[in-house]
Amino acid sequence: MKISGVKAARLAVPVLLIALGLVLSSCAGVLSVIEDRLPPPHEVQGGFSFNYYAPSARQVTLAGNFNNWGGTEGGGRYDPVIDPMSDSDGDGIWNIVVPLPPGRYQYKFVIDGGLRWERDPNNPDVAYEGGFENSIVVVPPSIRYDPERVTGTVISGEGVSVSPAEATRESSTQVTGVSFELDMPDAGEVSVAGAFNGWDANAGPMALGDDGIWRATLEIKPGTYEYKFVVDGTWIEDPLNPEFVEDPYGGKNSILTVE
Image: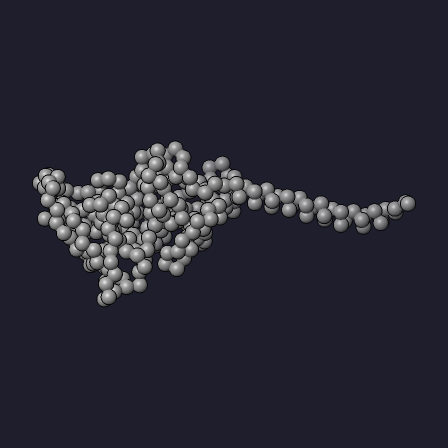
């Protein structure tokens, strides 16, 4: 059967549209594959690697409870200079390597100065903090890099400020019972962590009293220490303690002096 030029042209239009749709679908599939192939946070040389696919973004940063949520914790303002990610080759994949200490952390990716806060699409592990769903990364004790101090976390002894006399006393076997209190009845789990217990959130669990106040008494050697409360995974300073020092990410560590 012979097909006229007009009929051929009419037949060619839907064929071209179908072909174009297949091409676009293929491109979208490639982009989806690129995103799906990104690994969740994992150890690399120098720290834990975080990756996020955002080809149209002008800026991406990493925010979590290890850096005061990009400066916003406690009512602070988002700071884009905290843990910025880079896309050096322009392929749309943003990356940052953070030397996190062992622990369990929540995080999100912040796009274009706080326009969007996104969970990690390549990480199925999530938790809630402040009513928001966040991604979770667990850094094991078996890391092979040298970790750096982050908000609320100090690696064995770093961040302790003591005078020579206090250092001498601290090396003794004498300990003192120190009581901690936090009025936060709506919290589900609270602990106190500081330089006196290796900043281990599990080493200083607090008990909730009938009056809505969390309490704990820890045996601590004489000396001067930095510490924080850990409230449902969030690190906060002691609201009743006026003594504090600035931490590296715009937050505060409370100060405790044991005589």
